[in-house]
Amino acid sequence: MKGIHLHPSGIRIRIEGPWPFITRRSYRLAGRPIVWLARAHRKGLGVQAHALESAKPPFWQSARYNWSVGAIFAVGSFLFMLGSLMSLMPSGPWQPSALMTNSVFFLGSIPFTTAGYLQHFQAANAGDFTIEPHPLQPRRVSLIGWDPSSPGWLSTFTQFLGTIAFNFNTFDSIMAPAAWDIQDALIWMPDMIGSMLFLVSGYLAYIESGHRYWSWRPRELTWQIAFVNLIGCIAFMTAAILAYVPNGPEAQWIATVSIAHLFVGALCFFIGALLTMRESKAT
Image 1 (cartoon, helix red, strand yellow):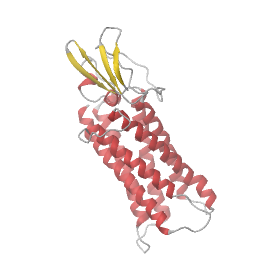
Image 2 (image 1 turned 120 degrees about the vertical axis):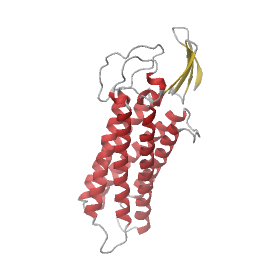
Image 3 (image 1 turned 90 degrees about the vertical axis):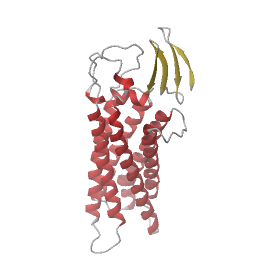
Image 4 (image 1 turned 180 degrees about the horizontal axis):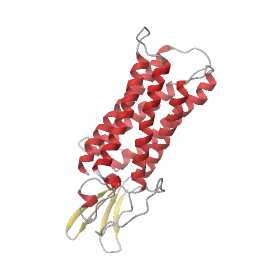
């Protein structure tokens, strides 16, 4: 979606984004070119967020906050990578028990949920687009918010819900029931739900950063973060599909490939988290 919007002040604003979202606005204010980006706006990144403001930005748009979110995601991703490697270890005296391995996955889901909520809290309190420079006014803090017109809000909300599903999935795996149908209901189904929500979240973040349904901007850090996280979401989705427990025996390679995809997904999230920590320096 592209077009020109005439602001009530008479300023012409060029808008861009995948319909129905607006993810980029460009205009001139007092002879100065201004570019507004949806992701940068909600995270408080770069000059655009504060250069025209005279008050200190809220703590959820600070460099420390953005860095912390990335660091917490990195911890969760690392634990999922560790759990995947433990699952892939061959049988033998050094092979970790299923209880130990699944406990590592559950521990990894907790930082995922923590960082997921912190990221959504940031999106819920990003504020509306304004064209005129003004001091930051006291604002009402929202715990969840409601802004379905924002791809950032939708992305972080679906991601947060997905992390909660992974909490159930990984906790139920610690003491997995023997019956195949109960395993599918308590373990596989939350895994599928969480993976689908992650996939929706990852794609929304991708179109927010690329301003199109499909984009290729490998030189842009924000696009790199969204792209590598989207690949991780796809890997989590394929891992979940392969993790279905059938009523009867199945080939061993299926479980192995499922865990391998889980490792790839966690690795992508780990890389994305490190890049997010780097991105925080622009705050």
